[in-house]
Image (cartoon, rainbow, N blue to C red; front, side, top):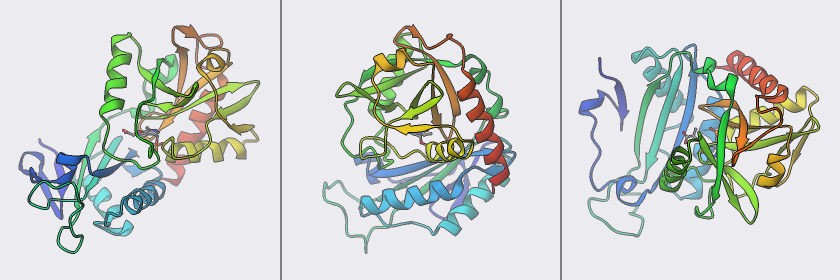
Amino acid sequence: MSRIVYVNGEYLPEEEAKISIFDRGFLMADGVYEVTSVLDGKLIDFDGHAQRLARSLSELDMGAPATPEELLEIHRELVARNDIGDGMIYLQVTRGSAGDRDFAFPDPEKVTPSLVMFTQSKPGMADTPAAKTGIKVISIDDIRWGRRDIKTVQLLYPSMGKMMAKAAGVDDAWMVEDGVVTEGTSNNAYIVKGGKIITRALSNEILHGITRAAVLRFAQEAQMEVEERNFSIAEAQEADEAFITSASTFVMPVVEVDGTSIGSGAPGPVAARLREIYLDESRKAAI
Ligand code: PDD
């Protein structure tokens, strides 16, 4: 059975879904996106993703194709129509098609943004074996643009980073700028030292992760110490633990950085506890 996807107001089998070749998402990477996870058929952190989407759109002077209430409705409809238990919903908004190629943005009165959404089923996503073994990362230079806080579809360099990681026989890459870690290719990066959770502070240099915000809130509620500051790869290699967060991986332990084992080389207690708290609390708050 083919998936039912959403394209500009219509629910269609994926083979029938079409977007113009002049769509600026296709020609200019002029678009933004969100990934929301689904557990037990319910949306995790939907409000956070809807708010970040609104911010991304506003930073790029792009119109909103639907209200947050309408977006919630479409998310739920896609979950139902595709019978998603565990998985993800991908949402993409582009500036639409002006019927030609032009660097200048089209008149928003004449060209409406495109909205595309689809599901990815991942049964048992929260019980992935990787959470028990942890993942390995390498470091790569961060050569992305200066507005990484906007969740744009310009993902060529993160894709190249994943390929560099694959070529090195590991799972992912942490990006480094001015001697300190910015973030992972598609996740936020953390280390733990002496029980303290250390992660880079928010700025235009990193994506403001929705999972990051929730995890730091839960950590503080659980009386765990959090310090928002830069750290280097050398400091990560000396840390007791390391981990990443994202909507698709939740809290995932990192056990090796550039060939050096972190701590005991196995997932540590802080990452394991945060993963448990995050999954428990998120399931409770899921809508
Ligand atoms: N990536 N940093 C980057 C560069 C990301 O692409 C992501 C998310 C994150 C974590 O954000 P959040 O916790 O809101 O998912 C941080 C998504 C999952 C993706 O591209 O598939």
